[in-house]
Length: 72
Image (cartoon, rainbow, N blue to C red; front, side):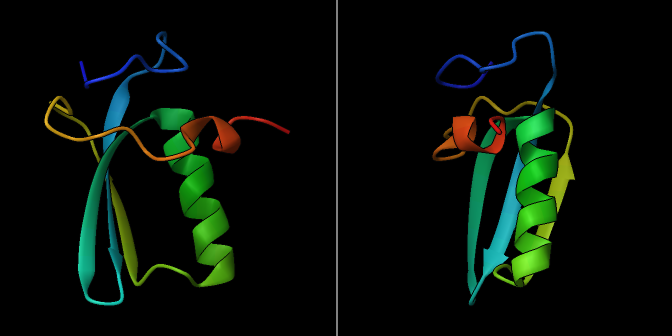
């Protein structure tokens, strides 16, 4: 499990890797937040590339403002 508790403990955490303007950012996020993040950022063309991977996410910090990707 990643450093902090998932806002959706019944979902798997995923590794969210974001490549933005030459820098790579790696986060843990619940699956729903990761999918919404990708949808929103693809629509806005913010990220050069975003990937999701299953596996151990314990070495990654949680996605900043993860709860914002889960609300209305």
